[in-house]
Length: 396
Image (cartoon, rainbow, N blue to C red):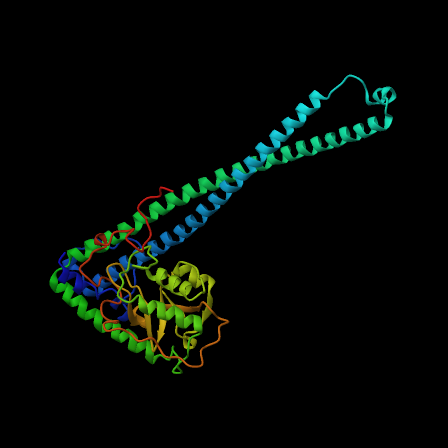
């Protein structure tokens, strides 16, 4: 597919919701040749495919986080098991030493007879005390040995279970990776099937749709007319995001060279000193909700009923986001996607008394707010590039 066609296609995906075109269920659309579909139907199909790809991406991200934690747990258990086995080896060596001592000092004469025959009874008593002490030491060593064996067995079982869990997560991640690729291939095929005339129609339809959606949203009073200032952490997170403008979207990536939507938001807030969950769904579920009319710069705006997309609020009805594969981090209207709600990573933070918004570079708002923004197809942005994850294999 030519670069010009993709650049036309880049602006089509959100007009469906802007012009009240309903989203279909996740089931496959009715068979229809591209030339037989209406503009609205093409928009709906594209938007469905984009959402399915992003939903699969967020599932992949969540599994990747679990896998990362599971690997750490396997390493912890392997370290603990190694220490337990070393301690067990030392206990066995000590038990062997005591056993040899006992054998070498054993006699058939009872301690009572030895005391009667001894030339120095006090010395015999002292010697008996030493023998008793050695016996107690041997008992303690045997007890440590038994405890060590039980602990080593327990840790070995836990390590095997943890490794099995790691393997299962790696397999789940592989399937989700393949699902993402399949969804992106579907988008590629649909875009490649469109004519230049269809793409031109879609581009016009979309630009009007976004403008209408934003005008309607801003006129609704959903946002407060009172400008709010961010906290210190919110300011740092937002400025970090602004510095990423122009970097490419890549599914599964969390910087510094490329990002997906939640990779950008999670990394921005981590850079601000406030770590937050990795995926948009976890951010929506775990962070404090905030009303839209209370938004302040740095808050997170979450999109779609499944919470599969997220952006940082910039102010004045704008957000900073990583839109979709093939696009770049950019400034977009807040209503470029259907808003689900907003969350605040630092609800206890104190807003700054004086605030100067970050200066936006030229072209910060250029490109598509959803969809493809360049001639690069998903296949031309390989997973595992610098700054991204390594979703190809799991050799660990």
